[in-house]
Image (cartoon, rainbow, N blue to C red; front, side):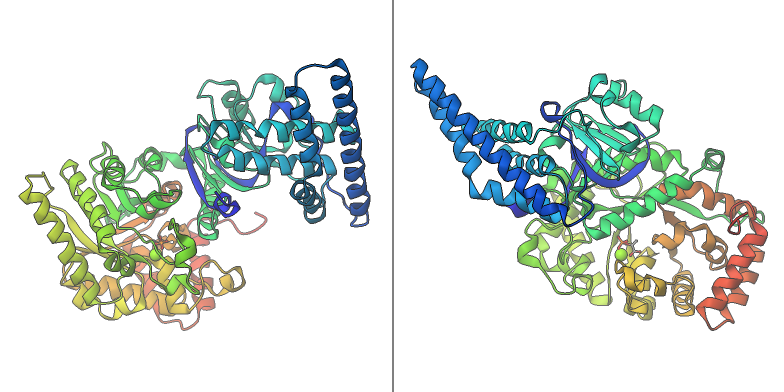
Length: 593
Ligand code: PEP
Ligand code: MG
């Protein structure tokens, strides 16, 4: 187990006991060293002094242990205690232990106690993963030696979280006494190994309105203090060390959660029909099956996008067919959902793959990802297809392929799909007989050859996140170019219009499942374009439904027609925003109002 393994993204599922999303730094709370103070060294000149303080405490600790050893040997007891003391002395002299602690002081500008604490955490993480019980237990020697240094550093009576910024508390469990000694206003969320809906932590979290996921079983083994961490208390999901793409997605969820208003929930159960009776289907986008209840509660008619690559996210081993099947059986035929769209995994490049080191690509967004990866790793693809097909007799299933760039890819994907289906049928396995096959339209070339693609599929689903990225040549996770990421760019609107027109002419459904579908600013434009389905983050659904129900198709078309005559994004945005503000003043308040 190398240190790199500890840097991997990990997803854990537990019991969501207090809703909401929080993104922050982890603090591994351990009762045994709950009194370790933490403060920032605000001035770089303080660092050298802190390192001296640490070295002094090391010398002091060693002196004490040597004295203790002498006392014990004078008493003439057995050899065991002396041997243990020798080990503790060796730890105090260990170069790696010392260097790591000094590095913590330097690089993080924190006090020596905290730096020692972080070193112990690091060792604990490594020891926890050892197979051998005896070796794993040796962490207690490091903890003992570290605790002695901290005691000799001598600061007392400081509570857990003294730092200016907030923390997400990670613990085995938390008693009232534990939470009582925390600076609770600095706590952003909780994630614990034990506990459930009625535990003390759950009650505290709900009353403070901070997200919490409990019953995670071994979160304390997977997290180190200062790791980046996301808690989704609504879905009961915790993501440790998220990669930038996952973080971005959760920033959006957090924003939506914060914006969600209870009164909007009234719209969740109403159909998305305009005042002049144009109806659009509403899908929910999910990454984990745990999000399904939220999708239903927020008013999804079906699942418009299940991003199955998330099944791969924290695995050392590839998921097998049964792992896939267990997930798909929870998605297809669920009461409250009329259909479910499973997207085959959009995996590859450096996205979530277990042997990420071996598959690094310079430009993974344009690398071997999505369908390209599946068509290369056919066996992996077949495992997923078999599981999808085995779940298909449960209810209405749609399957779609990501990153299709031309006709060969869909033909080959379908060929493999039918090969797998026929094998299953031969074996007498029940398979749904009305599975719809679709492609994501997210590579510009797919728009250009859409007429050909339409002949091969039952539906299109426009992935605006990637489509915009590729057509405007903007890396969707690069903050420096986000200002250019414009769904209302005339080129983007024109591509979407082409896709809808071609799809409808061919008699197939056209959905949209990129983020654009869930932003109410664009709802009238998308109505005007006559998309058949909008699929979005479940939290966004009530507001979008409100806009749909307050609009007419006629006025939406008028707006779209005007927009299509404009040549710049800025003019289009100005017109769309002004229209939305005028039509829905409550939803689109001008700053300061
Ligand atoms: C998209 O590209 O718009 C999309 C929905 O897929 P993802 O965000 O997973 O790439
Ligand atoms: Mg995409």
